[in-house]
Image (cartoon, rainbow, N blue to C red; front, side, top):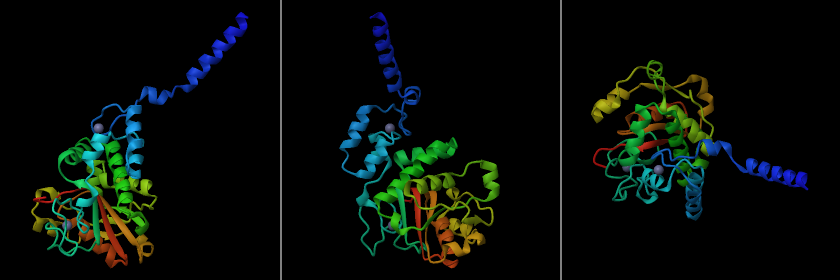
Length: 276
Ligand SMILES: [Zn+2]
Ligand SMILES: [Zn+2]
């Protein structure tokens, strides 16, 4: 009898041990933004969300609902051309007040949110700490955002806005490449990291006026000739962390169109714009 009881106890103990997820036990899921611990109740909240993409993001247990709501902009306030989130919706030929006078070589830009509030904090944290994990999570979120905007079926290939090799060597961190890799994995769109190259060293765009940004980016990017045949007639999504004046993305799009790409779409984590 005693042996039988011991055997049953051992069985119960084994069942208990196998029911514990040791990885989750050792590393409980945390929100990538506020770093608060995520619990089963958060999954219950995720299940009640009426948007299937949001449910997917919340189930990944990388964002709490509060941070996700702050990080992403509402769908209805996006400029269909430059992607800026504008309180007064774009009304003039699909342009908003920020881009109505701009000439773009890309057909559309999309972002997760404007560069401000929580999104600004996250981008500064990502760049300042060279936080690869955060860059990848923002890339995943950008991929989901492209899914919410029904863009996936239109795009053939994704490529990061290139960084000059000297900058890469100096920084050791290329945000656009990491973001693009993850957005590609999330959307299933093929990713070609070396599709474009930076042909000369440019100044940091953040310190320049719009006109200086334009001069700075002019002719600074080219298609990698190795991929010339692969992009003919294709729609390319150019991925970057932040787009402000659009000068860099515009020069890249120009080079791609000249090389035969049918269309270029820009996908960025944050859209920085004056007076937004
Ligand atoms: Zn959070
Ligand atoms: Zn616009």
